[in-house]
Image 1 (cartoon, rainbow, N blue to C red):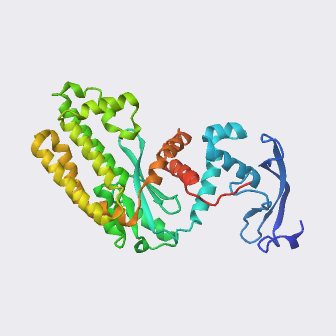
Image 2: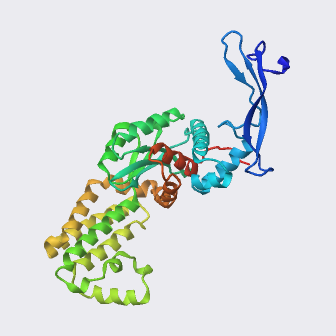
Image 3: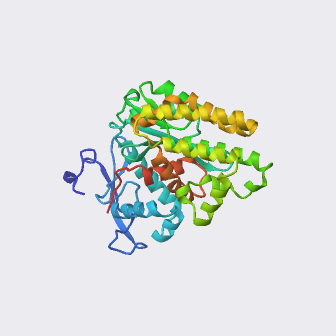
Length: 371
């Protein structure tokens, strides 16, 4: 063995079994199922008696695979389930998971969050039984920054620890977009004192739609003409078909609490088209007065709308911040379909670590090996 070509730690080592075979998966120019047998030199340090093995320059991070094979495997794992990729590559799923963890963990450790200023946080359902995870995203660069189990205020200190480990201070965050979750609001107040809370438009409108649906359900018990009108009153007028438009026209001629709640929802949505926070404030103040009049007219049928109006007043500053900062969680909401696919790819593994690794792989925009 030519010790002059070896690193300093190798020089003076005893040579052991020079023809120790190590299996490396072949590169793309060979058949994927083919394996090369590499004779890797081994040696032993005379001082500490530790056995060393020369790593060839084309060996990947996971060990036992070439760099080209690992890059191709990562390409497949972005698009298909691990079990399917294992069948395609002629490997076992546990070996591919080890490869995936190795690369994603290394790439995530090198990720740079120094320019992060606008963060969105949202919960995502993992499985039945109220099992959720919290996902934090960079709303400017459209990438996932951090994922943690649970959806309480305790996820924010963990996110801040990850943020500061990647070159960004907690008080450098300027905006945090979220829903009305008291736990998330508490987490922002305790950890990000300089960040402005922006209540996501999607969640505000979703809560309003749920309130109008509660009004319809209560009134339907007294007014049979509301039967089968659930989806009719949930859609926007521009999305209705011809026969649905005619049905809605007939329905709006009746003096129903459900119809009034539907009209209030459309008016609230129109407020988001206003150009300034001042105009939006005046419109929403008038809207809350309109809800109070509806409560006096329709009584208990309008309780859900009244509760929503009270929630709007409690979160007034966060709602109006939408017009000042223009932030939404649209990126996170769009990830729901991606997240469903990720859950299918991590199927069969109950550990949260597998799910988080897949999320970082698919939406973390990490610097991973490419072909």
